[in-house]
Length: 262
View 1 (spheres, rainbow, N blue to C red):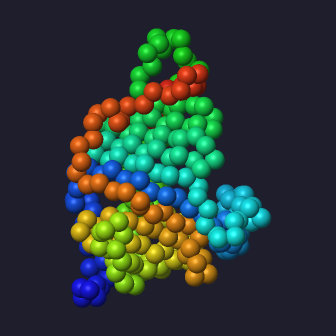
View 2 (tube, helix red, strand yellow):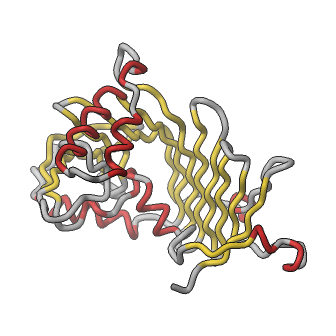
View 3 (cartoon, helix red, strand yellow):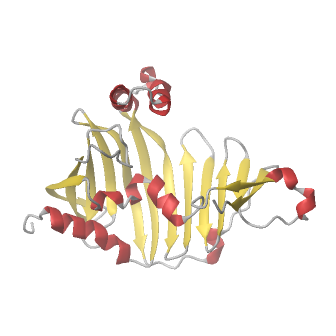
């Protein structure tokens, strides 16, 4: 076991991922303990009275659906990242259906299987006059790689930034890769954290060679409430251009988007 790492060492390790690979192919599980997540949400709601968003999330959890063993599978992530300009993630819901998000060069697409809808910035093949009701502006950040990284805790760069207190717990091996397990506690009370604001702390398993997260767990009352865990990972493999294109199922509603300049 190598010497104990200090907080600055841990921040440096987390920052290392930004330059440790050219391409990444990854598959990860996404699990939730419904009872613990609901408990965390209700506590957060109580600490932020009047927040309709938080309260709606808290009431949306059905504690009666929690399985005996706690964690239940929500879905499987598959991610292809070709730096610096191309990203794709597929999310296979355990209940059925697969969502797709692609951001490559200056184009973006998002497929929502529950609604049978594809949102895309690709220019429509029809003449503009034929699809006026299907074109609308979206926020400038929509469909960017930065937006995708921010939305997936396993890829969040915020853990290495100020506000988090980082402490090493020990070393672990995951998928044959050596990693350090880190306890991350949010200390900046004047700011709301980006990642899982309803948990007490996060446990991060960080790859010692590459600095990427091999697992990320949100802890409530000392137990795992939400977990993302890598189950396969490849660095610097060739990712063909075809990965970053997507043809939706037949009869999919297509909504063409143009980024807002506001």
